[in-house]
Length: 219
Length: 219
DNA sequence: GATTATTAAAGATCTTTTTCTTTATTAAAT
DNA sequence: ATTTAATAAAGAAAAAGATCTTTAATAATC
Ligand SMILES: NC(=O)c1ccc[n+]([C@@H]2O[C@H](COP(=O)([O-])OP(=O)(O)OC[C@H]3O[C@@H](n4cnc5c(N)ncnc54)[C@H](O)[C@@H]3O)[C@@H](O)[C@H]2O)c1
Ligand SMILES: NC(=O)c1ccc[n+]([C@@H]2O[C@H](COP(=O)([O-])OP(=O)(O)OC[C@H]3O[C@@H](n4cnc5c(N)ncnc54)[C@H](O)[C@@H]3O)[C@@H](O)[C@H]2O)c1
Image (cartoon, rainbow over all chains, first blue to last red; front, side, top):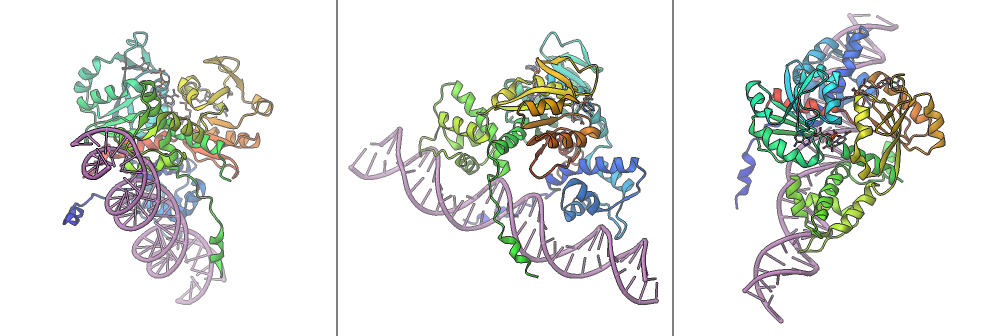
């Protein structure tokens, strides 16, 4: 009956995820401002460029611990460092990618990820045409080699860009091999143990929003 | 002073976007169930597979207009048709893609988009190496040809997969040429007239969530 | 035929996120 | 020095979304 007791559990109330998702955009903007030689930036300015609310930006930036000065704004350099630290972009994150097809190859060859500290160090596939080759300097191994390499190197992140049917299997293997976070591009919901964090990038979800809008325009 | 009058504007309170984003997943699941010969499905079953709340699924599905039967569930066939109609997946949507690089090529060659009715009919680039060639059967034209072709064909959707620096220009051109919706993969916020709908797919946002989690694990 | 278990539907509540409001700070202008 | 305007910060309110609760329907079981 006294189920109210349950609410004693203190949830570690972190940073709102929408805030984290906005931060890379701030970081991008700040970096290009810095390149132009700017030293300070105000929240209203950022808000205007990003199409956001004023106070939203102020609150997001507050999570980095950096405070701005009235009538001046924030130090761009301070903010960049704080955002990079907050997002973990100033550390090295090595990742394995499984499924070196069209999408996988694009991810491997994308230079922009360097900005985030994330580096794809090896790819895995089961297609004999691909195994043994390199893509953009990254070697493609047979999937069998994953366990061996994952234990020797110290890999915390796995990227799944295989067809949907293989995704759950790959996720199970990754979880078993000590991967801490999975970035999943296959259009399925994968199940993993609690200590593994999964981030889905379901392109279909985005496309659905567009097609729904085109098909049923809001009045 | 009487600014309360503003609140008389009736907002056309549509379907929640998170609901639209979940729908393609339901559709995927239902299609694979149908392939296995299943005829009915219950909301709790879907919820379990997708890691969602029971009532969430019921409410989402209610937006399609299809009602389920107690003790039986929903007709899979009815639901599939209703979801496809709702999402606009049962119509033809022709799209132009600008920026036929790594990511653009992956998108062009992705077979899965057929399921949604969306088809990339032409690609555009400024790289002479690419112009005049074909990628997966899709011709690559010089960007200059966009206006001409967009007016002759009847294209409602544009995909931006150019570097960030070019994105705003491309968006302006698309908006000028009557494109109704833009799917933007460049990591910048683009500005367009009100009647153009923009859907951003910022891979950085997803990566940031992962790296932030890896760097600062919750307690 | 009555009972039970499963399910959808509708409504209420809670949580999260965004927006609005007020206050305080401070550089620049007077 | 004083005033002004731009700004950050903190708090309140509103909006959106997710979850929980109750009710009603109905197929399967007894
Ligand atoms: N290409 C896109 O633009 C795009 C868009 C949306 C979603 N996706 C999703 O991304 C995933 C990959 O798409 P793609 O277009 O690159 O497909 P693809 O067929 O080009 O690549 C898939 C790769 O995975 C490999 N593979 C298959 N089974 C495997 C296994 N068990 N272990 C290791 N490797 C395996 C294949 O050999 C192939 O190289 C799919 O789930 C797809 O739905 C892709
Ligand atoms: N590849 C990925 O996995 C990935 C991941 C995240 C984000 N992105 C973003 O997607 C976009 C494309 O990335 P990519 O890796 O395919 O880059 P890319 O360099 O391979 O491709 C870009 C293409 O755009 C063309 N282009 C440049 N300026 C143009 C213009 N003004 N008009 C028409 N075409 C033009 C180039 O010739 C090139 O073919 C970038 O904005 C990138 O930040 C890509």
